[in-house]
Length: 405
Ligand code: PLP
Image (cartoon, rainbow, N blue to C red):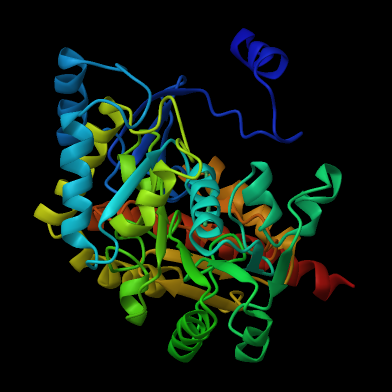
């Protein structure tokens, strides 16, 4: 074991008994390089984060330039900071008019915490409706509204008055009542294994929320910033939430998130109580400068336009009879097989052959693909070739074993 590995295992807190332990030396564009000089094509973008690739030069320059001006100067909400202003204004320009005001935080889970509190403050209600198999984050509030029981049982009691409905089931919408403060939902479920709802469902959900006076929160932490072939996934469905949460790909590799709503809604956090939601680091100027640059790259280079075509090409290139199902929107993929073991083997082979793919939290029979949306066609073809070979290798092993029985 290298000394780096033993320090990592001993002094850096672990989240599982099986970390990948790739020792990173550098990352550029669609590639991550390890200390031995091996290169890996990043086909998951650090879990839907580096949508415009690693260390995009425009983002790196924006960070450097902001570093020369100032870093942290004051807790969120007191001083006027140009990077926050410019980012908030830019976000407002690409979102519907009712999503005009951003509250900046540091992560996806914090964005959801803020959104849940805001919904309670606006409605004066406590009930929260969420979906089975959803994932909204790992802090207490977000965990409470996440639908995977396996991740929750050890941490109870969690938030009370949370009710779970089945995703994409219109019958269940009757559980949204006059006591519901909000419904929090991923417009396309990510960690459930890329579940895409029907157009009808999200519209019926919107109508039910409006009828009952419940707020609709769309968690676009994973789907945002071009991943699904629109800047935000809700654009596919023409259904606008009352509160939108974003993070992950927002910062071009830097940690920043936001919950976004109307100015009228957001103003309620200034009184009753005053300082209704506070953060020291939220809206950090360097992260906001990176996020603005990231958004400008996506918009100026029309990156969203190429997403669907790239998604289709991947689907064609990895096609194999052992695949049970591909669920995909844009460049957000779940590739499903007949068993978690086969998925495990394929993912491990891909990684050892130099393509990073990964598992889902709540869908062991699928693996995920989410390459950078600006990946070159040649890298895309190269990665798909490795994935297809890994699939073929493990499909063959399985067949061999069953024919020997
Ligand atoms: N919401 C969704 C839909 C996510 O996919 C995630 C992370 O995977 C989160 C929230 C939590 O984000 P973070 O890990 O930045 O707290």
